[in-house]
Image (cartoon, rainbow, N blue to C red; front, side, top):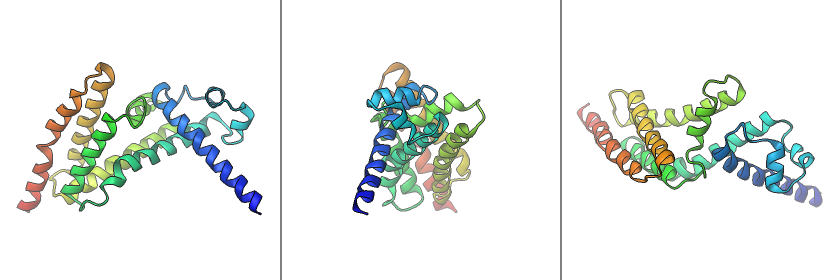
Length: 201
């Protein structure tokens, strides 16, 4: 029994290590560039050994998205949970999101921006999973905007996301970190506006 437990832990640890590398590769090379053969080469594993963890390329892609979501939640969402809901947490989410983008939690920049651009016009399970992940993030912004008293929470969430992703895109193309400060200056007036609307209600 003890041996079985150790084997189970080893399998889980190996899978986690595989997915850690898969996420990094996908952020720079795209999910389509992520194959069992390429990943096996990167990790110096046999294809058959890797195939034992992921039975197909699509399964590998979906597992990689799940791992990327966990990394995103740990970097962006969890650090804000100590803030009161509403305007304070909305501000914290925006701040953590920009820190995440600026700090390159993923080597290729924002994993979600890259995979959305890659799959937004390609129907299927991978696109659905990417949409689900981004949708959950937008819903979190919208929820906190609503609690902050925003007149149009969905619009505010859209604007906050657009400004942050605009900074990410500019930085990826031009390598100029000033894009994040520009995004912060653009976002800042939107957040007190939400607080003011709440006080006025």
